[in-house]
Length: 193
Image (cartoon, rainbow, N blue to C red):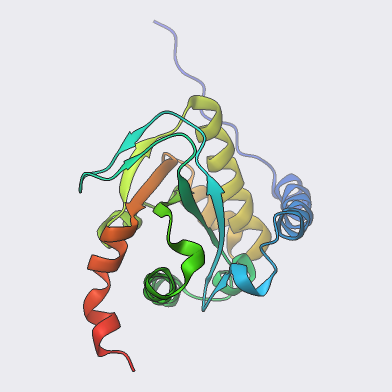
């Protein structure tokens, strides 16, 4: 029986070059997709895009069915903001953004036909916020995992250590229906001015 070789660690200098490349790509992607526009900002920590869903039908736990052509919101972290926060503060900022998004979905007509929101990530604690994780294809999983790792390296001072910590986490596509988003954050919406 052959021994498995230990995973080879990527040199820090190469990770830094890759991180710089990722920051450049992130800036280009943000501008090209319009994530830098005011209507894409959900304070304090999210950027969103509303797109037509392309893929196999998805049935969510609350009965919401997302099929080809349905409107969905893709959630993106505001990388520069999130990277400056410690994990607890980043989580609080993400929850605050979800509350704000729930409010926007209720009030703004541009979201009237949106059925669900989705976020691709390696971070596991998103499930406690009402999201339902689903598996990605192998190539999507690889790209999201590497993208997340480069995001950590590119935007955080302690990025190399964080990237190594999260490397084993599997990337997932996380869904939450608009009705679940409203329900999950309804108490916050009712108590806010």
